[in-house]
Every structure is written in structure tokens, then in C-alpha cells.
Image (cartoon, rainbow, N blue to C red; front, side):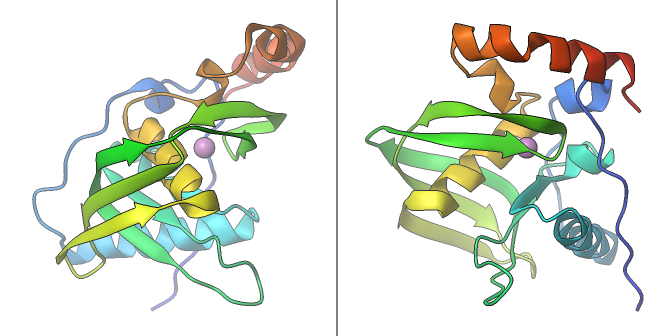
Length: 171
Ligand code: NI
């Protein structure tokens, strides 16, 4: 089966602002969508992607924080953070908001519940570091929230021209 990368929607596209629909069962079509998302993410050198970013408003995210040397693809349907603790600040970017990077404060440690690629319920306890951050960023996408909604007023002001330009040319 040939899986091809799909274009990533850019800031200003209304799909990015919609609340995504839950998955009722992990069908072959949804697995294929997950495969396409991984392909699209790798093609853009990203570490995470949410389905709305390729125009599919369903609760599905993919992440891989393993790097090129040690791929670690993960697929989560209906991802849900069931507990979180601590606080951490780190710089983020987003494939849908190209050329913008800014600090975002998020819980440091999370416990995640989801369905995996095979539709099996999983609970991942006490995730932290880049993986925890990436998962939180992607789950925000499912709520129509972008990381630039969470940056400081100063960073927002500084990036406003870029965002306005993006929104004008949004595909
Ligand atoms: Ni993003």
C-alpha cells in the first residue's frame, strides 16, 4: 500500500479552529489516515501532527519524538489527558504556523488515555519532557487551539505581522 503525504493546512484555515469529532471505532480508513499523517509529518520534518492539520476534523494525533536515527511513531485516537502535574516552559513551533517559535507554559507531567493504532485502550502514565509537551500541543489542535493562543502578549505582538500574512494566504 502506497501512503502519500498530504498538504498541511496553514493558520487562518477554519478547520484548524473547529473542535474535532471523537472516533467511534478504529476503522481501516482511520488507520490509513494515521499512516498518511505520519507520512505528512515526516515529509515536513515535524514531531507531531493532528488530523485537523490535514483537513480531517477527527480526534486523532500522531507523534514521533525519536528523531531520524531512532523512529518512534505513536498513534493516538481519542487522546485524553486524565491527570497532569508541574509546570514547564519550552519553545514550540507548529507545522500549521510556519516560522513562528515562542515559549509556551504547560504541565510538565501527564497521564494519557487513548486508543492505539489497533484500537486497543492504552494508558500511558507520567509522561514528561518533549513527548508530554508534543502530545499536549497536538491535543490542543483537536480543540481548535493553536500554540500561538498561549504565548506571551509580547511574543504575540512580535509575531502578529507574520500571522496576519499567513491568514491572508491560508489554503
Ligand atoms: Ni501544531
